Image (cartoon, rainbow, N blue to C red; front, side, top):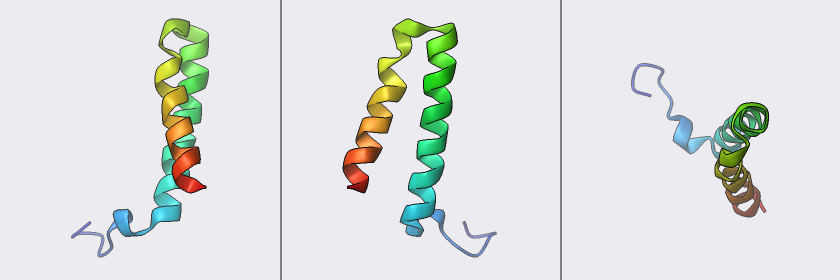
Length: 53
Protein backbone atom coordinates (compact mmCIF):
# COMPACT_ATOMS: atom_id res chain seq x y z
CA UNK A 1 0.00 0.00 0.00
CA UNK A 2 2.81 2.42 0.84
CA UNK A 3 4.60 1.73 -2.42
CA UNK A 4 1.42 1.97 -4.51
CA UNK A 5 0.34 5.19 -2.84
CA UNK A 6 -3.13 3.94 -1.95
CA UNK A 7 -4.57 1.47 0.49
CA UNK A 8 -6.85 -1.19 -1.05
CA UNK A 9 -8.54 -1.63 2.33
CA UNK A 10 -10.05 1.82 1.80
CA UNK A 11 -11.58 0.81 -1.54
CA UNK A 12 -14.31 -1.35 -0.02
CA UNK A 13 -16.20 -2.04 -3.24
CA UNK A 14 -13.07 -2.99 -5.15
CA UNK A 15 -11.84 -5.22 -2.34
CA UNK A 16 -15.24 -6.93 -1.99
CA UNK A 17 -15.34 -7.56 -5.76
CA UNK A 18 -11.89 -9.15 -5.65
CA UNK A 19 -12.76 -11.29 -2.63
CA UNK A 20 -16.00 -12.41 -4.29
CA UNK A 21 -14.17 -13.28 -7.50
CA UNK A 22 -11.67 -15.39 -5.56
CA UNK A 23 -14.41 -17.10 -3.55
CA UNK A 24 -16.32 -18.05 -6.72
CA UNK A 25 -13.11 -19.45 -8.19
CA UNK A 26 -12.59 -21.48 -5.01
CA UNK A 27 -16.17 -22.81 -5.12
CA UNK A 28 -15.61 -24.11 -8.63
CA UNK A 29 -12.24 -25.60 -7.74
CA UNK A 30 -13.49 -27.34 -4.62
CA UNK A 31 -16.62 -28.62 -6.37
CA UNK A 32 -14.44 -30.25 -9.01
CA UNK A 33 -11.58 -31.50 -6.86
CA UNK A 34 -12.54 -31.62 -3.16
CA UNK A 35 -16.31 -31.51 -2.75
CA UNK A 36 -16.02 -32.10 0.99
CA UNK A 37 -14.32 -28.68 1.31
CA UNK A 38 -17.07 -26.83 -0.55
CA UNK A 39 -18.56 -25.31 2.64
CA UNK A 40 -15.39 -23.24 3.17
CA UNK A 41 -15.64 -21.00 0.08
CA UNK A 42 -19.44 -21.06 0.25
CA UNK A 43 -19.20 -19.55 3.73
CA UNK A 44 -16.96 -16.82 2.32
CA UNK A 45 -19.54 -16.01 -0.36
CA UNK A 46 -22.29 -15.90 2.25
CA UNK A 47 -20.19 -13.59 4.44
CA UNK A 48 -19.48 -11.29 1.51
CA UNK A 49 -23.14 -11.23 0.46
CA UNK A 50 -24.36 -10.38 3.95
CA UNK A 51 -21.66 -7.75 4.43
CA UNK A 52 -22.43 -6.26 1.03
CA UNK A 53 -26.15 -6.00 1.65
